[in-house]
Every structure is written in structure tokens, then in C-alpha cells.
Length: 444
Image 1: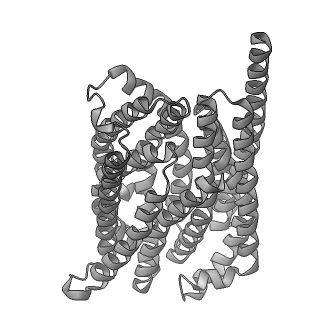
Image 2: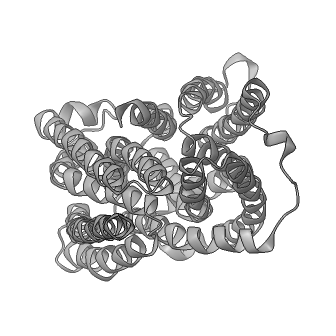
């Protein structure tokens, strides 16, 4: 598990570090700039994750084909994943432009809105390379190839830092674009990710002779439909999960810029720590999928529970760090004392939900390995949107507790989702093992 998961975790951390760098490098422009980049990034991802989620279906199909020894099927699913990524980019870009034109309806602080609109228009151009990168990555990862993705993401961070340094502040003769410069830096780094993994796929096939170049290029509607319908619940689940945090950010945008800045900084730190269970979830989906492909019930059970154990342990450590040095963590992002004071309170709430966030993240991956993408979607809808977000809104605005109230709502939603998925996983894997054992007994 660790051999597969560690490079994936590092890759996920490299991914989220890009957003952290953007916030760090605009902090000198003030709390409104921090809020604009944070909110803009969250709103973009709330839309883009739908496409990313659909492509998560590649985890199941490619991993199970790989476990069954069908390399040709791995390649066929990869080809259809590429077609799906291009097809999804068109409507997602159109929806993004439509939503940007109506940002004023969200009730943002005027100074934040003025910076957020142009930033989002720029970042929207990165939908195309982002989805292609996801297709490349899911294909490689489902076959156990994870190190190239890790290296590509780490090097992309250097490109992102350089582009931010040049375009935000106008270094090396580049124009000083401020917050917009961070948007262009994001586009450049995502284009690099897609191009980098494309070269990895081509190089690996030429080196190993796995037959990718000999695969049929005929596109099957039935295969696209299977990928879409398996990925759709995963897309809805990821969209619901990211969307609830984006909605919380939008609600926080109605508060003072210092509260929004504290919210975005804390959310960014919580998102960074979540990359550990997210990487574990990807590893769990691959290892459980491989076991399912070779009809190994014991292996699937061990893979899932091992990922859960490691994910919870790592998040317990993150929780301890949040509780031990909250002020120091906040001052790393901002020198504004009001932002620091609010952020310290938010980090205490974030410390509590770390374990629950990690638990539900890993279990979602394990269930995806079994081919179950529908259950996490339904529980995200119930836990976050029907319970957690309304509770957070009530505590924040109706009870007057401010941005901390939003975070209590997020915590409550995570508790509901994580405990529900834990019960579902235990029931599903137990039933699958019993069915496998009875099949062996009958065969004997």
C-alpha cells in the first residue's frame, strides 16, 4: 500500500501546493486579493471536479482490467477516457463563462468581486489541459505507475512559482498583473502537467512495448456510456463535496474581507492535509480494483482496511499539528492580526474534523475499487447539503457566530458522511468475501 500510496500522496500534495503558492504570492496585495484567489480557485474547482469525477471511472475499469491481465482493455479504456475529457471540456467551459457573468448575484464584498471576476475568466482556460492531465494520470495510476505523476507535479510547482513571481509582481520584464498574474500562472502550470504526462505515456509505451500504439482507435459508444454512467456518481460525489466547501466560501464572501481571508487560509491548510487520505483513496481504489480483477476477496479486504488505517493515522497527526501551533500556521500566510485571530479559531474546528475527513476520503476510494460510486454520492448529498451546510448557515448568519459557524456545519456534515460510509464499506466487503468463499466451496 505504501509503495503505491506515497508517490500518489506526494503528487496530491504537489497539486494542492499550487493553490497554496498562489495565495502566498498574492498576500502582499492584501486580504481582498487572498480572498479573491481562494474563492476563485474554489469556484473553478467546484465546476471542474465534475469532469475530474467522471474520469475517476477509469480507476475502476483500468485497474480491474489490469488485475485480470488484460493490457489491451487498459489501453482501450484510456483512449475512451481521452475522448471523454475533450467532450466534457466544452460544456464545462461554457458553464463557467455563464456563471462568471453572474458572480454579482452571490453578494460578495465589492473589493473581492472586482478581483475575482477577471481571475476566474483567466483560470477557465485551464479546463482543457486539466482534464487531459486527469485522463493521463488515471490511466497510469490504475496500472500502478505513480512516480512519473509525482515528479511531474513537483516540477510543475517550480514552474508555477516562477510564473507567479514574474506575472504577479512584474519581474524579469513581465507585466505586473497582480491577481490576474496568478491566474495565468495556473494556466501555464496545468498545460505543463498535461504535456508532461503525455510524454510519459508515449515514452513508457515505446520502452515497454505494451501495445498502446497498436490499440484500435475505433470509438465505441457503449464503452463511452459505461465510463460516463460509472463516473457520473463519482463526479456528483466529488462535485457535492467540493461544492459544499465552495458554497461555504461563497457564504464567507458575504462577511468582512478579513473573515474571508481567514476562511480561505484555513481551508487551504485543511485541503493540503486532505491530500494524504486522497492519495490513500487513489491507492485503495487501484489495489482493491486489482484484487477484484483477479477475484481475490481477501486481498480486496486487506487493501481497503489498510488504507483506512493509514489515512486515519495520518489525519490524527495533522489534527495534533493544528492544535499545537495554530497561530504560527496562520502567520505563515498573513501578518494581519485580525486574520490570524479568526484563523486560530477556525483551525481548532478543522483539527476536529481531520479524522472524519480522512475517513470518508479513503472509504470513497475503496468503494470505487469495488465499482460502487453511487453510495458516496448519496451520502455526500445527505450529509453535506441536507444537513451540514444548512446547519452552518444557521449558526453563522441566524445565530450570529460568524465564519466559525460555517465550519461547525462542515464538521457536522463530515461526521455523518464518514460514519455512514464506514458502515457501508464494512457491509459490502463482508458480503463480497462471503460470496467469494461460497463460490470456492461450491467449486470444491
